[in-house]
Image (cartoon, rainbow, N blue to C red):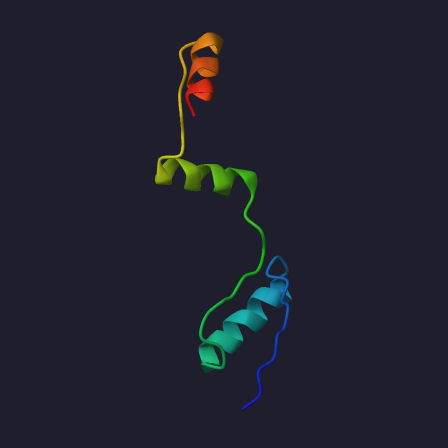
Length: 68
């Protein structure tokens, strides 16, 4: 069996219909997206992972930076 890579523009009506058709036939298992995350998505991931720091003032921020 051969493997093919096809790019489908899901923003168009034809692209959505083609994707739904292929999913319905069982020809593809799932969507694989190689798009990069937006800045907002990266920020949400940082919040979920606890990689967010707070400071009460600029001096506090610089003190925290100097500790690391």
